[in-house]
Image 1: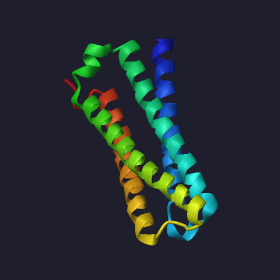
Image 2: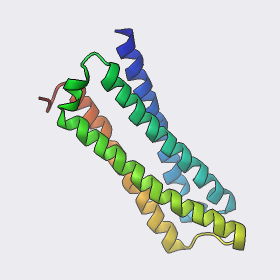
Image 3: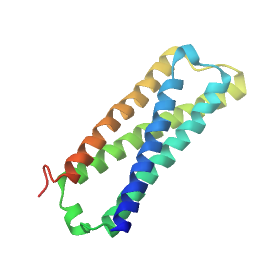
Image 4: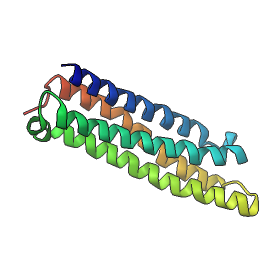
Length: 151
């Protein structure tokens, strides 16, 4: 029983880390706040977002492997597959944003210029899509934990 509680705790903490860093990223990625320090910070915060997302995935897989319900039960649940799909989509959007942040940093270092407003808007859209997908994941988790929509 203690193992199940610790696995759940680790999974929740990883998700809270992900939510924290995604929120920071969405706050920083806006025209009014853009300056050289923010360009550099966005790349760092995005890396923490990706690491947190990987921890969410790893702790979730640990729950499947060592949790009380067993891997057979978890893998047969459509809600689990939906959660994983949303997480992968969030991380893919964050990776696309990362490529842009790194390009911005390289341009800043080479030319001293900040990202253009259209590029910033397009990147913020990626980050916001990821953040909005994140809101659905805990709902699916609660439904799964309560046996709603399960097999």
